[in-house]
Length: 152
Image (cartoon, rainbow, N blue to C red; front, side, top):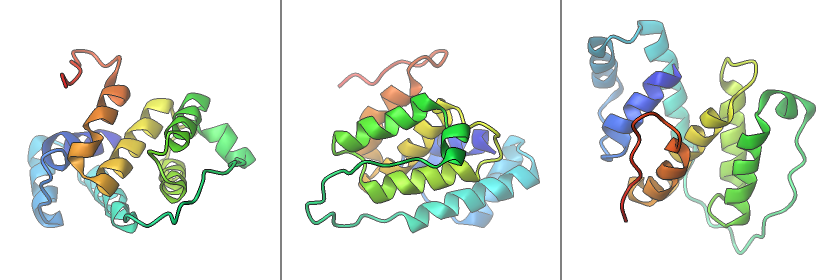
């Protein structure tokens, strides 16, 4: 399922294209993705609609205490990434909570840092538009085979 989300990001979300679910489903099947995985990915992607820009009214970041399940399932590097972005003022608290919720919704027993980073990238792309998330993509994709950072 996560491969489908990455495919959709690369082929649609970066270009700010939003085809309807039926069209996406057909195109993903034509590329070779399994029907069950397509349905799960599209349902997960629909959760992005829950994430909308909100005014923070000058709220300052607080301390987030993680539950034992969150500590067991979410990679410490991924949690550190969230803390870093929140402290830098780039990820509002409600978006951090959305990222954690979506990461825990994955079927992985332990959610690796790269998946937490990708979910965060999708969230910031949704909140600020794909153009504002390009800088974050370089952080997320560092270390991927063949990835060339964006020249600014």
